[in-house]
Length: 433
Image (cartoon, rainbow, N blue to C red; front, side, top):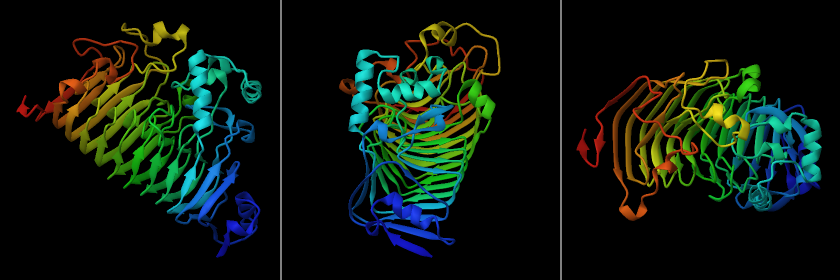
């Protein structure tokens, strides 16, 4: 085995480059202390060990992250180079008791100013650089991160077309955008990982499993500014073109604190998301515990999802199954995408079916026990909720029911858009229904 310490090289990337010339297993140790760096690119057959007290901290200059072809909010395009990146690699382990820090404050501040100005066009040089590479940028819909500005922030970590990847024991924090993003990859294990981003740091998902298969996530802690464990598979026609599902995902024994959705499936669903099991997790102060979401134009099918033995305290809404996800809709699309009238079923019509939810105990619910709304032309099918026990929070902690799911105030009555829901052993405030 070739083993080196980053302290013996002028930079972390120099150490990685040195190891790339070794035809054997490679091990790189990051000793205690703070190492500042720009973008890093990993290699195959590498174990990266961050010792206790070690911090890899990335510079916060957007111009330091040159454009790279990637998938950004479900669509392939050029975006800023991920801070820590691996492309078409295999057999990588990142471990140790150290920290990978995205130094995200200035990134969040820049995006906050974009939102305050309601800016929708590129302005900075690094944005125009991407706009020239993405000529269709004006028509890019997203999930709320304003892709039309071309401020396409980098994830903290991205694995692109990789195999046999392991993360364990690390702390990941302060990501500019999504934190741990795996794309077109397989055989991924994430265990005993802590991910921390401020609750107000928008779009800082903890984990985004994107068109990947054979994934295990266990014994982790997430406290972030957007969704926590997030499963995706591309958006709209571009996602249908790629047509790679996310499948065979197992999540267990995780704790989720602040997040928009604890277990979030969607809203980028074009390739399909299937065969998912989530069990024995806790949600404390999470906005939505279970969150399945899509909308017209996204396409794909969410199916064969099993969620069981979940404890929730202080969630806004424990269960959300919704097909009117509104963030990121362009103004000229709104009337059609959010219409309550049935539309033609086309390739980009999404579907949700075969959902099993069992043994959910939710106390101090702040908004709504459950929000389940399908499309008139694509009803949600075959949902079984078994043994769902919930109780409301005290009056001073309750919030308006529109907080259950952002749908621009659109709510359906009489369960419109729901085809089959079987609920058994339902208890409300201690009373069987």
